[in-house]
Amino acid sequence: MMAESEAPKRYWIWTVGCQMNKVDSDRVADTMQARGYLPAQREEDADIVILNSCAVRESAERRVSGKLGNLVALKQEKPQLVLGLTGCSVSPDFEATRKRFRGADLYFQPTRIDQFLEQLDVIWPAPADEGVMACWEEQPAATEDKGPIAYVPISNGCDKFCTYCIVPYRRGRETSRPMLDIVDECGNLVKRGAREITLLGQRVNAYGKDFKDGTDLADLLRLVNDIPGLERLRFLTSYPKDMSDKLIASFAELDKVCEHLHLPVQSGNDAVLQRMRRGYTRDDYLRLVERIRAVAPDIVLSTDIIVGFCGETEEEFQETLSLVEEVRFTTVYSAAYSVRSGTLASRWEDDVPPDVKKDRLRRLGEVQERISLQQHQALRGSRVEILVESTESERHDTPQWQGRTRQNRRVFLPRGDESLLGQVVPVRIEKVSPWAMQGVLVA
Ligand code: SF4
Image 1 (spheres, rainbow, N blue to C red):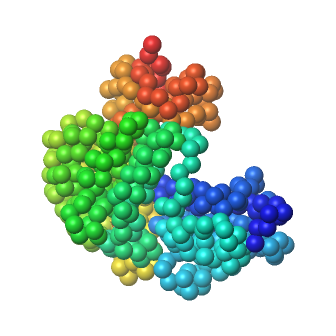
Image 2: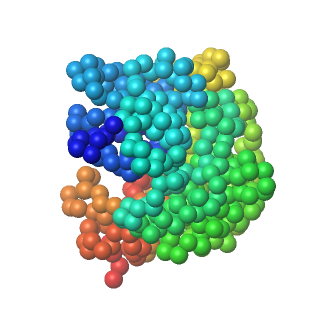
Image 3: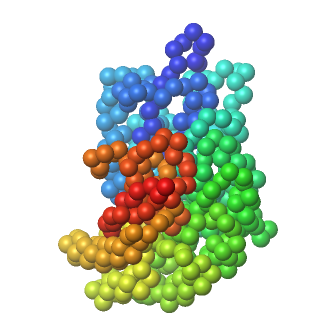
């Protein structure tokens, strides 16, 4: 128990993986701080270390195992150290998780902070009058400034079972958070300084299907769009088959919904898409892009692509290249296929050699770089509006602000007046590369 006279315990959270994991780590940190724990300055000073894991790729899970192994060794010297494991590596079957990741003291699923608190209470019981929170939604709204960019998970899990993907096995069935809880949370974030909110879910545009009352993401966007003080609204990640006309109309009807959509295609070839069990064809995807652009002509699209999936031939891969040329995405997040045990595809031969996968990644990267550069070159000399979101100094000689346009294009500008942080400002684009643009503030 943390008695009143006892020094506060310190925590450290180590995170790998996607934006959802980063948000979950923030929530665990908020929960711990609400219970009197303090962040440690260094991992070595912590009383409790929590690993927030990613299972999407084998290499990420290897990193988690390696990190846990190091910490278990540290625990030999420091037996009072408490180790927690959360994230996608923790499946609902805790015993199986314990066998795969030995040595942690706490295992909890990322959406189940109550599991974490129950186990923590056994190790360090909370004072009886503390009013233990059952889950994150019940945390009191704090008033401190949390920065201009915020991410809010609205659903968890996935019901699609694409043949290469581990997410449905680890995160479980799709569940949506109650709409009013989300709107409340977004309102509180705006009070704390957020100007842009991204709603997150593994299949975010399936939001509300489990309510079975017709409520959907478009309804939620409409409510969040009405929050005074919010400037921009995004959602991530969308599954192509769930882009309804009602949702597409949000881009035209709701002023804060930004003109950017991340829409993973994974492959441009029908046979590969079928083996992946994506549920759409190349033509379905292209028709969808047409429908979206008809409603929102300024919209830009980014995507995910897997190269070298089981049995992918050179001709099949070339159809992916041609689709990229045809759609002209702003960004392609590409990865070479790697087997995830437990998925349907893990029963098939991973028969595209590593050097072929590497070569396909390189060729895809070259096509995309050319397209991104052409798009950015077309913007040179023009005026864009960016939301100033953070400082960036590592890659520049002089301190810079970093911001993004509504279309999610990254722009740097020389750092000046501190009051610009969180403001939407006009910028003239002067230099461009495939990945970002450099601008100056317009008076
Ligand atoms: S839709 Fe996305 S999260 Fe769901 S199974 Fe397919 S790839 Fe995985």
